[in-house]
Length: 366
Image 1 (cartoon, rainbow, N blue to C red):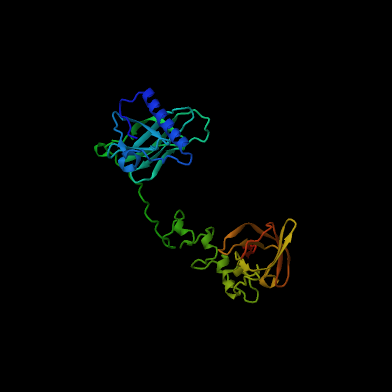
Image 2: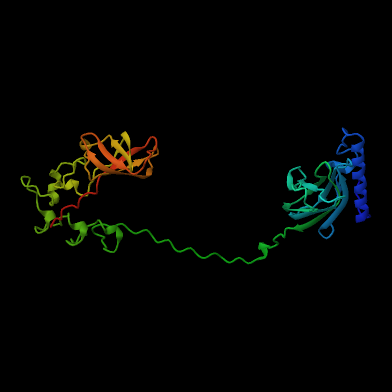
């Protein structure tokens, strides 16, 4: 049905709708099996290509018309062309007057590419007397098409569609006209500290920490194992080693000691001072559930240098420590270690890293 643009009074519109509905009902009664097709009497605006334009004046526009499912004119299409190059908020409100209370109209909103932007769906409660629906679309632009339709087979109404446009305010700040302050100056990068030699020595220079000055200073840590030139008998570093009675505190004696065996650290050997055994990676050979965790057996033991002072932790396939996977050593055998972990489930592929205790303090040499 063609829509009116100006001269429809509310009473006349309702009367037309009533006439259409009555005619549709009469047709239905005349032939019980016959139903009026929804587009039997529709006009050119019943398809998207025939959508009638809604012109915006002062950012508002409206359209009036009638849709009736029993009258064979179920759908009207409208198109709104928003200002070119602008984006904003489009609010659409549909009001209608039905021939009898409870009849429903709905509408769908599409962009120029056919994508749905918003929907005012049919009402589920047919006892409702609501005759108004609205949607708000943010970021609208270009051409917007609106499909207005009678919701169900018996619905009809004279409608008014109101469109309100609010363009997005564009920031017109022109940075090119503004004065920009210079950035603060970077702090100067300090010059690299010069190296240190016994002849160019300065206690305040960090590079001199491990250098004994040419003018021997017995209180300077780097001089403790250095014999001055000429030698001074009261300096321990100048004393010659007695091979038959090795003194680990004499620097001259250290050449006669074997390299430290990290698997069995001997603190009488000065080459072991401040050394610790390396960590050991081992496989889990048994996993047994327990009431408050899990009992595990690890494939490393006494022959690997393990003692109860060692600690252990589960790691995953990537070598990352498993949360809550700390081990408490229970017993150590020749080639195994039994331990307990608080976890009730061990991750698949997990292994164990065993770590020795920190090294004991080295003897104080006088």
